[in-house]
Amino acid sequence: MKRGERAAVARAVTAVENDYPAAAAIVETARTEAGHALVLGLTGPPGAGKSTLTDALVREFRRRSKLVAVLAVDPSSSVTGGALLGDRIRMSGHATDRGVFIRSHASRGRADGLALTTSRVIDVMDAAGSDIIIVETVGTGQSETGITRLADTSILVWPPGSGDDIQAAKAGILETVDLVVVNKADQPGADAAKAALEAAVSWRGELVPPVLMTVATRGDGVGELAGLLVDGDRPARRSPRRTLQGLRQEITEAALVLARERARHHPRLAGLADAVADGTAGVDDAARQLLEILTGGDDSG
Ligand SMILES: Nc1nc2c(ncn2[C@@H]2O[C@H](COP(=O)(O)OP(=O)(O)OP(=O)(O)O)[C@@H](O)[C@H]2O)c(=O)[nH]1
Ligand SMILES: [Mg+2]
Image (cartoon, rainbow, N blue to C red):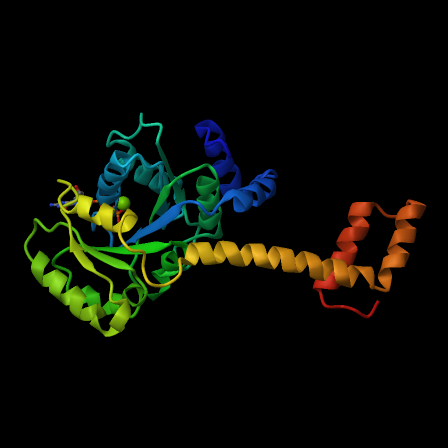
């Protein structure tokens, strides 16, 4: 997986998605190795052109010799739905490109449309050496903003002619998104949609996201978008992904110190050590018991 061998990465993702026994070790390794990739989150209403834009972006990133992974998150839990999402991207000719890794998976009913497994799969793709990971999710409402927490840069893809829905998005994704793309700019109402979206985010002051126009089917505007994403200045705020990575590491280290400290002075330690010596308890078992006491906050001994 760490060497980016496709079959191994695919197996690792499957293991993590299905919570196979190997998953815990894979997740642990992936977490330790992850942190290099730029994670892009694409979200927006159904049919806005997210998959088409993803496909066009992949082409742009490949021209820049980036290793790309795509994760299409299916909001339904249906297996066929997930497979279809993947097929839609796979059909477009990246299938034989060794520099592109494509997966789709179901979000298994999580309210924010992003399962815990999504973040784990991102870690696996990151650990496998991806330079850029594109995550596609459907949705614009308040409950759909999970992507902005998972991604370094989140992008809202919007089609012309759905002006009324902008009000709904205003209370959700438009509060946090880093970039807005009016796709299908070849269709009527694109300029009006751009203006409406610009108005809807204008209150964000210094953090107003740029609003771009693309025609994903033709690749128009996609080079500019790709350039902004990888070459341009990073958003002013710290990358949430990197922050999360740093936090995890800090917590792991702090927890280790804390556990060692507490265990050393715990009144139950001697008793458990005796039980292990007697053979009435296994080391694993005794350790788990003590950990349960420590994490349960039960210091009574
Ligand atoms: N005219 C035009 N059609 C487009 C453009 N981009 C995408 N489409 C078409 O719009 C339809 C939906 O595109 P998708 O990329 O599947 O949209 P999506 O947002 O991924 O859809 P879901 O994943 O189902 O939510 C397809 O028929 C595309 O060919 C565009 O820029 N212009
Ligand atoms: Mg799609």
